[in-house]
Image 1 (tube, rainbow, N blue to C red):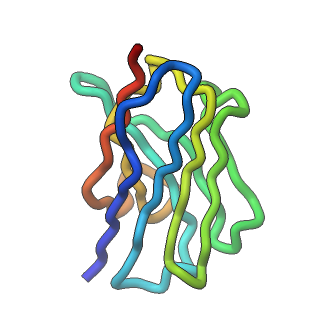
Image 2 (image 1 turned 90 degrees about the vertical axis):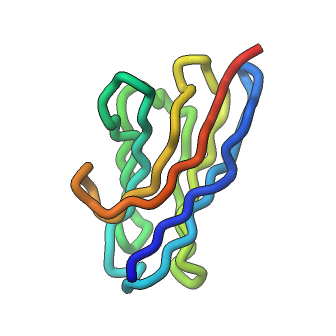
Length: 116
């Protein structure tokens, strides 16, 4: 049974940092590209970043502007998203997704709130 559990969200002030983690199980983690998406109530499911299965190539949405870094530890079946210089517009529920598109399997997300 595929499971993806995101964690690490919280309330942070503008300019602050958070590190999201995603624990994956039930599939061969190192065989899949992995992604982070986010969703704001009333808005669509928005792609944030994708990391190739080997961990050697990453892609980011334009709004990231060098503030986020995606990484993975294939030995631990973990995906990460280091988010720096957070902005109020980054407030959303963040999901880790298996694959590189919104149709991939996802688990429960983690809420990130950026507010002073």
